[in-house]
Figure 1 (tube, rainbow, N blue to C red):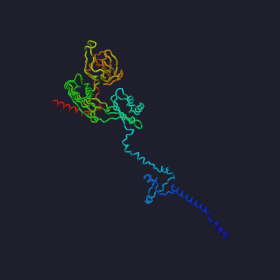
Figure 2: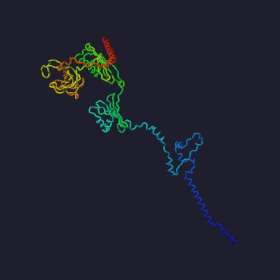
Figure 3: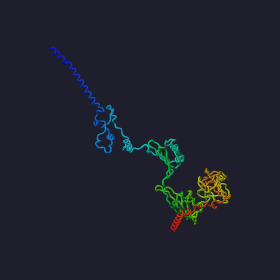
Figure 4: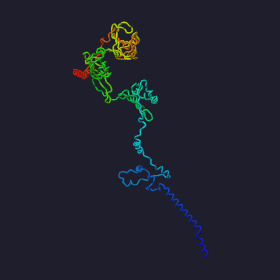
Length: 496
């Protein structure tokens, strides 16, 4: 009995052991609680619910969330599109996840942003827009190099432009009176260059990505036909100006009829003229006078008509209604003169030598420097000083004729000895070298070496219109002849 009692007492747990067990149980529970809290605060991709809202996912744009939805296949029920597939995420820290969750713009979005400028940017000028312009009037002595230097443009740029094309090489031949336009960007880089030869013709050079492009441009000009008539009272020039003819047209008129009419000696009061000519208009305003198409001159009762014809080679000349050339083999007067100061005579008092001697030519008084023209086609056989003639030129015209031009102030460089010259070509300029009291041209005309009066000698005519052009010529001149006749009848009726 005593043994059993002692055995029972020995099987009871001691108080210390119970306390120990209780402490261990509390520690274990604390460890479990800590682990549970850790799992809750750091969820893994397996532990996170598929449909649980996430701040990063909600921050993504709606467009990107739509891009990851599966496309519905034909026959697929609508319910299958309600649940999106799981979104895979990496196990990262809070900051890393926040950075990674920032959505990147798609290529379509970027392109759209580039194509549609912001409202502020529309009005802003780009770097290639013109910022300033410079207009330069070219004067004598100017060159493109000097103009580029004034505008702080480098010589290498000019070299690059000039050698960019054959058209651009025209910049090496600028002339006084032309206008140069330069355009620069905001960085003072050359954008364009325009050289205006006239109001109609210009050269434009543009800077491009490949270099420079040069273009010749011509503005559209309107051509109109008109006519003017007049009656001579004292001189052709005064009466023609009074009728409205320009200096250019007066010179054309004199050149056309200059072989048949001596305007210094044969003009009489009451003589009449009619001119049909072209006028060029630009933007509705008269730009210039064109060529004379037809003209009529009534001198001392004799009627002369001249009609312009252009052949298929582009050569233009004036003919009578019958097809004979208005141009003779020689000009009657090789210089535009004020008056005839001395005529052809067998004997006259020489103002310098103080004695009588023959004067075998005609003296045309004119200003120093007035151009002297070759009276006909030929070859220069003498050029130099010749006694009292001073500076002289002699031209041989075939085997029969020679002409002499004396008292020149200077020669034309192209009219050298041995060179051939054309009728009307400038060979020298009026002066008073040799035995001369004032500036004038002494002109002699010789036939087989014999002096003839240049004012009265019968001049050989030029060739008539070619046979192959005759039919075309007769067709084209009929309207002009009809118009001349109508104007003439009207003038006569008005005079009566």
